[in-house]
Length: 172
Image (cartoon, rainbow, N blue to C red):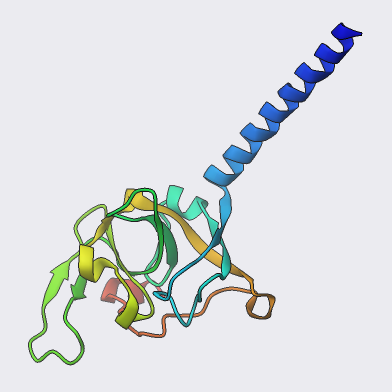
């Protein structure tokens, strides 16, 4: 009797460990569900929207300008941020406001990306903390899942700050 119960308990522990490993690998290498909070990506993503963030693009270095990504905050490693990729390594980024008389620019260094929220007036992003290392990117947001009435792929940037370089337009 005791042996039978011990065998069942150990079997259950074994299955739990196996499924835990499978779940870990799925969330680490395939993707994850993310509940977004804060106003920085409005109107594209609003508070409490649920999105799916896939991880394969990050591992294959396929992040492109215009993609929305989930990344570790450069200020707080326990917090994730959701922002749009405005520039990739080597890109020249205008860092001044549209109303500024004199425009200032910066270059995105190798191994970094420039991230900005779609709601420029209410977003803490690369304009505040500079370009972030590519290694902080956790995944690329590919689907909005909730609310159901806005289910689907995400729209282009409403800010029109993504400028295609000459080399980008040659490949189209």
